[in-house]
Image 1: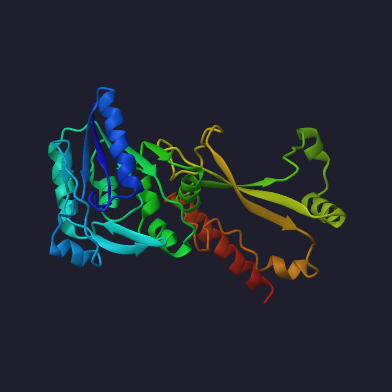
Image 2: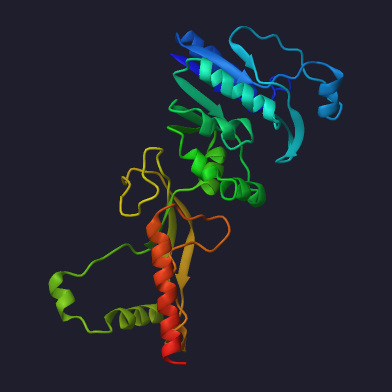
Length: 306
């Protein structure tokens, strides 16, 4: 099998990712595959030192199984300096290689890193894609911008398989690049039979929750179900298998019933679209339709008592 191993980082300013790729290439070759490393390569010259704050690249010999994608620039990121290709030329070199390389698989290391990894996710055509996540990060600004305004979540749906080199890296990928969210009662779910439903009072749900919260807090666990690349992410009516990984994000606690409930009900809208930083709605058209209907409902309720 002919496998392209893509690094967004300079091969001659090596770090953990490039060493990982080098070791992986050796293992794949030993198993009878044809790995080929695609990575930026900075020559030892004055321009490289200028682009990397005076740091000299390491002399590294490469063979026919290596494809240079051009130069990088040293960019402060995540508490270190990342030597990344951020100009158009390396992106064009990557596209040319993917067109003529006759690869069976493209393995993208650090698929959330601009710009080589980003472009590979959208320009590889029908080539099967594997993504390996290496980095742990809690930075809400950089990860939040990459995940939502810059479309990181949508691009990552192109991956056919996701790998993390550590639990910390897996946490980062889950935290910022998403899945489906659930709110699960801490005490579990219970259901009424048809006979019980036929006998309940008209205001059963309101009365029951008021009685229960008076006895103590009611807690709900907020859970994210992580999508597989094969899952449909733009149709909420299609269920994902229960075997999909689930990650608990936090807890919602109900402690009391508000005293002015009738007045508050006039302003409550059950908006299905998240209105908070870090969570992005899917492309399911039903969400916008429901949001519009709930907004109209709220306006009519408030107008009826104005």
